[in-house]
Length: 179
Image 1 (cartoon, rainbow, N blue to C red):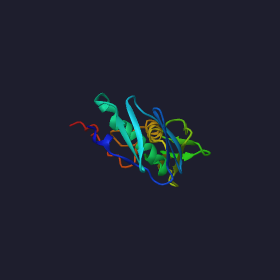
Image 2: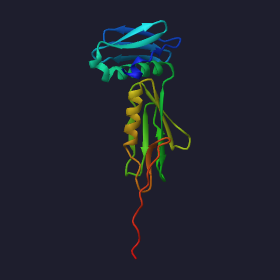
Image 3: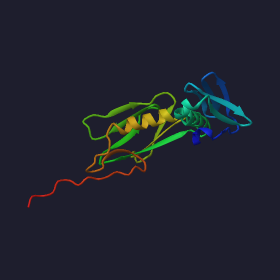
Image 4: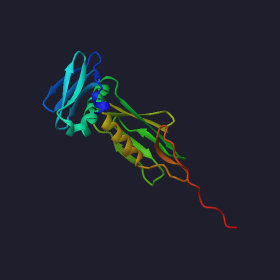
């Protein structure tokens, strides 16, 4: 049995859930999200909670996944999701251009403009070295943060580049001098 799949999903106040076939529509104070369920998984609403139920044991592999996806949607419309990035390196920085474009200066000969997708917001701190990506869809927030990190991943020798906040990096030893 899936331990995660068996856990009920508590519904906070102000969250409404509409179940239509294999789609669960969750609406809350921050917005509305639709979650597609894998085949053989059903979601039932019981006294203020949601339960993910599988038809038989052949869906055991996706039981916990389906429950986690619905739970992420419920949490997204109530609290939202945030991913923080740090920019390390001399002259490396980011700034907002308008409301939905982030401009990066990452040591290349040109600036990199990153347009934000719909439903995603970004804020840059005054020092221009910390960036926060927020939104209600966890997958979209993580994807945008990963794409921003991939513009200049951390260098293994000097650890310069764009990294997640709190990410621990292994620093490689450089060349040694001749004897």
